[in-house]
Length: 113
Length: 113
Image 1 (cartoon, chains in turn purple, brown):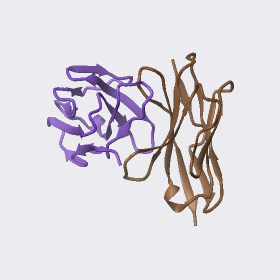
Image 2 (cartoon, each protein chain N blue to C red; image 1 turned 60 degrees about the vertical axis):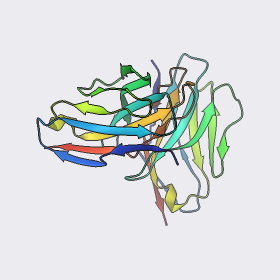
Image 3 (cartoon, rainbow over the protein chains, first blue to last red; image 1 turned 60 degrees about the horizontal axis):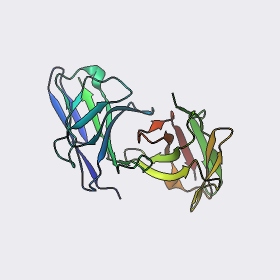
């Protein structure tokens, strides 16, 4: 089983609050990713990182931001949550080689009231 | 741009029977990987099987096998001897040397006892 963790698993929060979704992996992977997934729908890449101090925006525009100060940690932050941010957020990691599989965390289900 | 299409939003199979999930993709690249991921309800997404584009032989993993038709850009997943635990959402995904995964829309598989 992949050693990639996300906290919290569920979060219900009011509009305007600042939130940080945590993601950590213990596999030493260089690459990390954040996906957004609405219930029963496909995953969309919103952020990725190729290593420490590297962050890039994904294919789906997102108001969230990310940081990569340590290899194992890739937090996602929303400065001011809105109901449109309600979704599931999945974190993943992989080795540097482009063709290696991505290992996924359990996800954070975010509800903004 | 690369795209992945799963045309079956839902599929159903009787326990112990065989089911095939369809996936087509579009790319102009010659070197890439294809994956099938399984996402059980409220559980972690896991890799089921992967196929290297340069390999002609279809990948197999126990009860799971693929039918990879490179010229037709088709990548179907066959599940033999279906079990109740196979019930999940299945995603077809594509990656090239960027390491970024492009997902299909997903197919929800129901397994009937």
